[in-house]
Length: 265
Image (tube, rainbow, N blue to C red; front, side, top):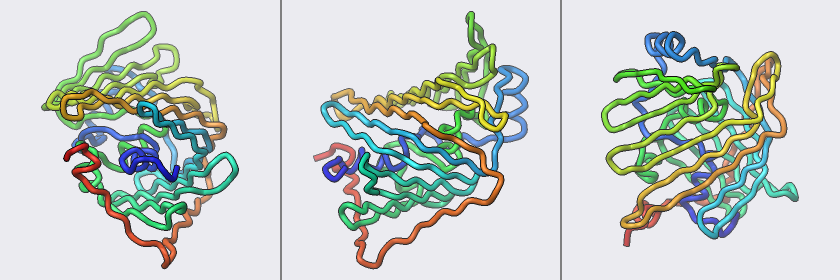
């Protein structure tokens, strides 16, 4: 993890769960549209915990970590990442306003608002989006048009708002989201997430495997980052969770060079 490029490290800290447009917000109207048109079964929870393995690949660069995730819906994402030997390399706390990440291997921390991270990654994101992707809930635009088509096994919900197209494939048999593709027509950046290995936990059906492929244009080149997540344990806690997070005094704040992160000279 120590030599991982800053941009990829930030992606892994966010558990690879990013999207393009923070105008995507669930509202009662759009939720009703989804329910009527595609019958997506949303995962309802207050607290969520998970443990799993995360593999990140970009070109020849590969990174494998074990991640512990805790969430309080609409409020907090807490992540601890460690090596297979049990050494914690990073800890992250995300709230609706900001993301703070400790790099324990280098005694530094990063602190950014979501708009600042959006600028670094060339697209906007929010806490609600990250939480939705973690548990496999649908992302819904609060405006624009939505149409539903069908194939043999899926209902396919397509939405178009401004320069963003989102396509969701919902299983006919389980009504769960199995694949989502988001494309930004302006820069042709695309994120595709596939969910599999569904298991019933506390009377809730949730995917225990997910593969995310983020394709983006860097000057004249097309690059991609692949994230593979395999949960070994998930749970929906009834009792209030703790989210321990304190930046030691000896840690120095690190700043990501935006131009370098975006591949500019």
